[in-house]
Image (cartoon, rainbow, N blue to C red):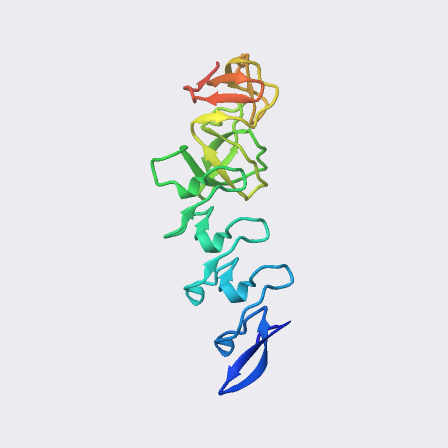
Length: 225
């Protein structure tokens, strides 16, 4: 039996008048035909209206949806996910955007998840090379062959997986000066002045639109004699 109320009613039990307490909660089929009373909050209990704030799947078929502790419908009820999964409703990820992995191929940013071969900082320009498979390292204008091929918005430790962007705005930079920018002799960075030393690589990598944003456009690298 569910939770009984102090409120009682008179009922006719085969010709005899008897008292029966109303219930503020329901224990299920055993409480069929019981009278209902409001609970301590002055509302009908979830067990009585057959509602749940989360869903366990098929076992909760037929139940009413209730708002959770945050005052919203739980992900398990609206069947939503921020990561790619079949038959799910798309929700925003932790950054308030649709996760790249949810978008179909050809839609959204040109980005690939790759493994680092050294520590990569957020905003670094990167170079892709073969080190027992494709790896990413900092692009560096002091070494031929280490020209910029993309950038990362979120860095990672050596051996970590990072998202490499091949186009778009690098919004993880700081201290940029608006105008065209080149790969710097400081590994991973860009600069407004093209390198000029013997053996340096001159590569235009786009243009800065503010102190914190560089529109990446990989130019052809030229190694100075």
